[in-house]
Length: 285
Length: 219
Image (cartoon, rainbow over all chains, first blue to last red; front, side, top):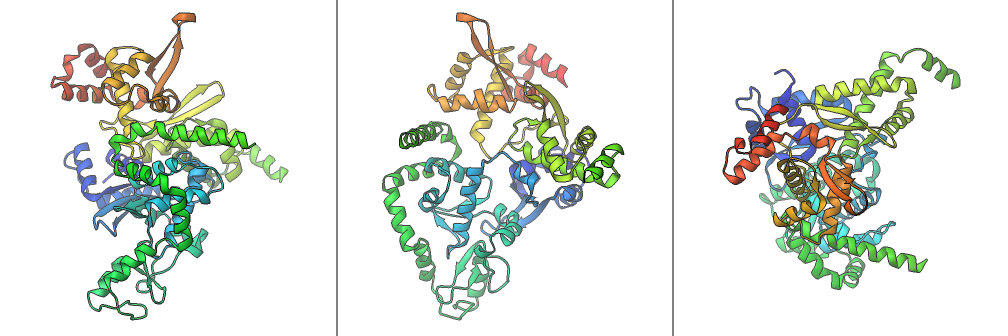
């Protein structure tokens, strides 16, 4: 099929949304034009040929957790051009880096919501927890993060987009799965020997033997729960509880309403808290 | 070094240099487009000079070529905007598209924008600031004292050129009004908004004859 309107429309849609499920893509395309003469796969192949020179790519992959087929827009270069983006500020990106590093170095590859907002204390620039919570919501929508009831883990977009970046820039934070040798974004470190393994690989292995694949120690579900609880090391835990006793209730309230409808009413809160920090700073000066 | 530059300036860019400069320019424009904030020509120039040493007399050619690539690959085009601080560009849809694709970063913001644009369009002219706030409050989109939300319209959306926010009149009669910004004029189809209205009020788009005329003349 000759490269045209439909390709451009699909490319723009995926690029602006970041990740779209295959079923939704088909729906959007059908609304755009009836009886398209090519499959999504063929369209994606044509588009990829066109955008390759610009270090972009559309990838069809399976989301490890929802097990749905998704289409992801990937921007692969890391240079002056990609750094010139101004959707996120330098401060926001600093928070993102710290967040990813924390998730990747935690044994369960996920951190609690409270821990996530408390990471602002590790930042050089000043950044409020409210701002952090707003960003976490945005990144979840962009599928850079995934959130279950309480924990944040890396989302399907981050997993595919940042593999190269992490290998290059944070080699210390990545570990390969002891079964498939791919980077573990979603998985566990064995409680006995510490080797990393994907959740999916582990589950497949457990169907046959109830042992950890790495060192053959007996496996039980309770070990995973325990790992989840140990997600925070002792000191971090202390830090977190000290800092956030009051804040917890607020964060939880925000998390609960993270459905978009309420966003507007929350907008005013960070404004106020920002003003407060600024004022305090001046007094200190 | 200076000799090299000199010779580069004198002859036109050889083909590979031009190609890589165009490629770099497209990538730069695409990365900057995300925020919808106009891109200064000076910033493009600076980027091209630092990354591929493009001589300044070639920059216009590179931008023209990059615009062609944007049209062919993405269906976007560059629009030149003259601002006080110099020439700027915005990246907009090459042809109007019947569906507005949603942005994930802030769906609430998108709802506000569509409501504001529709209100201006249905009013048939510039809308006074106070009227806009009243409308958005009645529509349940922006609470009456939500000043941070108002800033989104006054600052963010105006900067992104979806809206235009200007002061009219002098002294006591001075008022701020909202109008469609250049980006909205370029890429938001009026018929799309009218159809949304029609759906909401269970009427046909032709019910609003002036708006309908405007929308059909546009395309």
